[in-house]
Length: 93
Image (tube, rainbow, N blue to C red; front, side, top):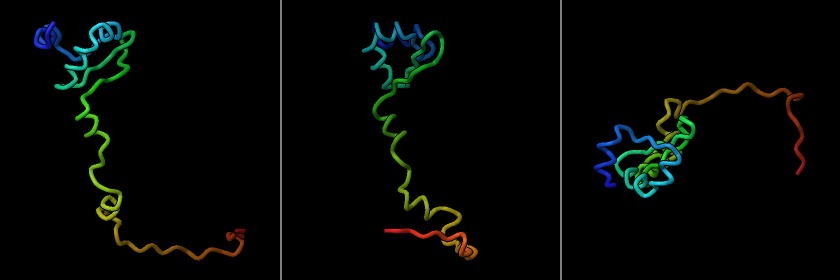
């Protein structure tokens, strides 16, 4: 069964686990165009997506340094109250 036949037959990208196992290569091929949802006992359980989509999800939009520099609090000086002697603790090295 081709992907085109599958897409005509199937309006969604949802697969029951047994069906997904039986047609695993078709599920993988279909994941290139859109994520494929796997259900177990009718409950959405897993998603198979293309490597490209996965990389988009895990790649930070900006570095941590850029994140802090773009913060509305960048450059704000905080004034902390002095600590009282009883709040200080001794640190042994």
